[in-house]
Image (cartoon, rainbow, N blue to C red; front, side, top):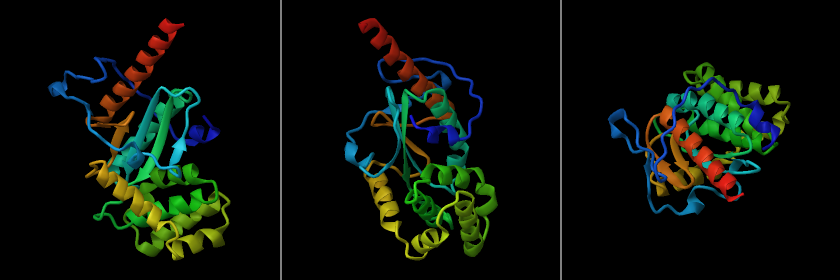
Length: 225
């Protein structure tokens, strides 16, 4: 995996593993955290989706998220730590799912895409989430100024960045992500898919599931060798 993953902020995790036949059952209210569904894989990952590709992939995690969603911001450091812990095993795709109740959902997504157009999507992604408290309650002009300051910090071409925001160059891409999320049954954020299967449960349960699948797959590979 590229050095982009290391740019994501990590926190410590404490996890426990229980893995049964691809479906993880937890003692907490007997929660089933994987819901097998017939989901068209093309709506989960597009050719131009933002992907952190593991060299020896064991698990593919797809997230539909809204930068202004507080739950998404809480998930960000946890996903970041997973990527740092399993850089060669865990692949990650970030998709947009802007929610109508948030004022800056679309602007923040377009800012991330405008940065991505200059090769800095993941760096902007990290800044937007990490500094959510600085812009979530700001006016439109203030929020935009903050995103422009991030672009300046990342040494982007500011004229190109601002033009993309002015012209809503990447709005159609963001809306396509949202349409794909709707097609996959997403109704809120964050929404996670593990190896193409919808996950429901706590973030701790998500970590448990991913680590279980990575470790189980590694055991199978070792036995085959």
